[in-house]
Image 1 (cartoon, rainbow, N blue to C red):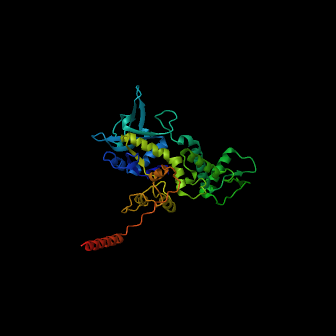
Image 2 (cartoon, rainbow, N blue to C red):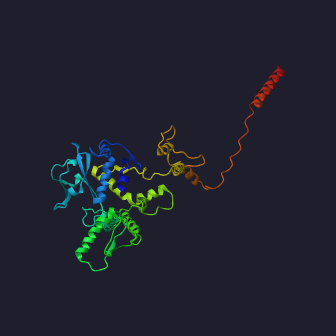
Image 3 (tube, rainbow, N blue to C red):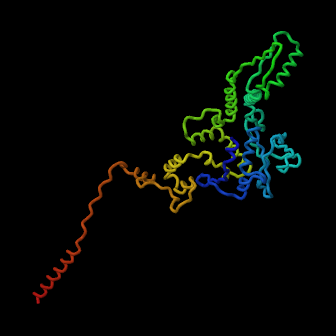
Length: 389
């Protein structure tokens, strides 16, 4: 469950921009190996193998293969039983690798730590040696296996327990062994239900036993819950615990992510960043959209509330739609003001006072009346000139 859920997530190469935001990019030095880790595994198979190795053995050893530039072009998950960590007198770490033909190792070699990505956890006894959670749940797992083995034998015997074959008097041990062997061979297992003919006062009494007396179901459930707890998996996800009463897919997936998957994903991302040497502004990141996927109604509600923070094209991308013209700017309603405009308002003496009413505008000039006055004045001057003449 855990390995499959991690393997299905797409790993992205991301770069930090000047605003501190990580955006997905492509780089010829790192993108190819993330897309196709090696020649015989897909990306999903590679990460599933990585996680299974870590969960089952506590350690995942990934061997790097470089080209002439020193760039990592292949990654191989090694068998943990074929790898031995070594520590030199000066504290330098090396790894002894035995023959592994899939990884191109035809003989025993010792490589420095820079050529190995070592992902480990539960390092109780040594910093370079991890332990599987099986170390903690081994007793419960063995109990569950024993219960299933006993159940298999019980059902192979016709779903009935054994019994006692008794005689009225004393019999020798040889006779008892002969009668027992004859009874087991002819009237047990597949032959159960056949008619037995008894003589000399022999009598068979079946033993009465019920599965409820041994609480078999409860014991199996307890064993499974202990195993789930060591892997931090919600028990209801493997069918042994009671499912939560609330029906919210996003909340259930978020709980599973934070409780179980997050530490494993963060560890893989960090190991890849250090192992590939991406630097400070480049890194790897798993795409969690498929894991934390919401139901359709919740998705549309979230997108509606994201207006003003996300552009319409970013919202459309979330639901698999193509961008549209004019959709690269965040949109808000007209009554919303920018922070800059609100800051200018707050700089006023009385930010919450009523703005003074503007002064009334002067009436427009009457151009026709002025022209008429000029005509009358001209006529008067002409009449005066005539009188003087």
